[in-house]
Length: 368
Image 1 (cartoon, rainbow, N blue to C red):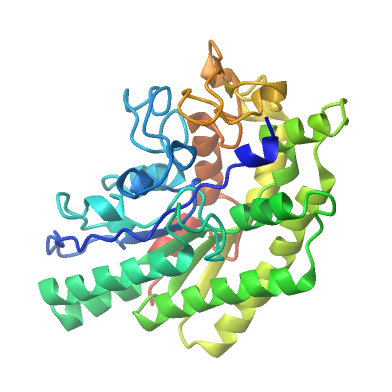
Image 2 (cartoon, rainbow, N blue to C red; image 1 turned 180 degrees about the vertical axis):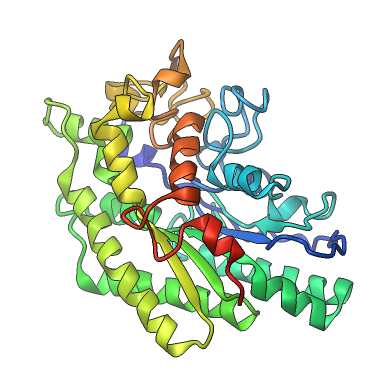
């Protein structure tokens, strides 16, 4: 089994429904939350597209710790947007493909597991970021028809726009350049260019408050540790070349956002240092309530790093741990519900060393 083929590059395809907008008109409604990105955030959009099980998580044991059934989330339970909903005291944000049957007073989640900033990343299997923007544009038009131009403008201006994208572009680059997996500046500029274009697109529709996750220490997830093991590095170490690619992205992200802040009146942003807290939880698991931070709860092979959890993907064999609460990682590429809960606490109430210039609680309260 070539482990590169089992990297967590989950994506989404050109399948679009035109959903019916369900929205209630509330006075003093808290800001809506619109979510974009990859499998860190996908609540089940990939359930509705023509893709493969590699890019889905709509089978057990995914979801069993909280929902008791698989929802499409790449974890054993809730994800960061779900915990934000709980902090903000509103229902879970529905997937885009479910808004025809659910009210989404509080926002929509457009994220697609396996997607990246680049359309080429897992093309044909996922919903890339620019297509997620098109789906958001569909929603804004439906919103205007439902509540009128003035009210929709208020909703969109006060809303928070939450992004996690770029990891799968790194994995795609690694898969294509496994012998020399270093980022070149041109590739990084293309990624940043696409991300900039999408942020500007949301801004054109009325968005003003943007929350960005930077990339985690990607060379340390079980899938990449296992790949390193396959290459002969048997001491269990991280693949530093991959983590360095994440660091290059993370260096470019605030520079890009500062430029947009200067160019676009009213544009506000905050960055959650996902790299810092994720790396700290891997290096100091007991600080976060975990016992095991290098091996996944669900998977097979070294570090359970082969993405086989659930037995529906290319490799059918998998092992499942006895106590998921001991594990930082649920499957080969994704944190557990407990980890997401810990990260959301820091995002919501954190200090400037992990989320700046605003924590999410103050960002929700920020007027535009």
